[in-house]
Image (tube, rainbow, N blue to C red; front, top):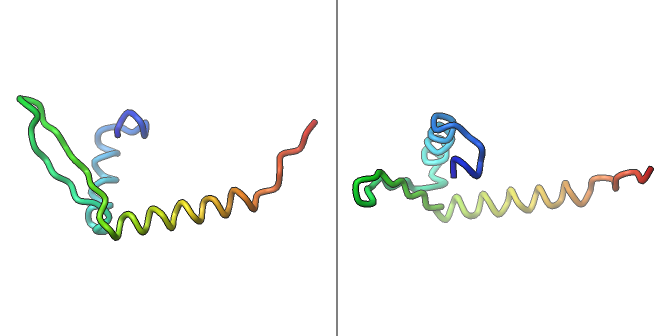
Length: 70
């Protein structure tokens, strides 16, 4: 997630903490062998909020004027 989002470890941790506090996701910390592993899962509330966000972004994108051809 850190690499895909282009965030530092601290930035990602901060974002995840806020999403967890809002009950949008559940964070499970475990190990895979000797290495720490963090598993993030969307809650029903989180899935609903994400779907609403995507719907709004699609609306905005479709309402934007077409680029000018020069």
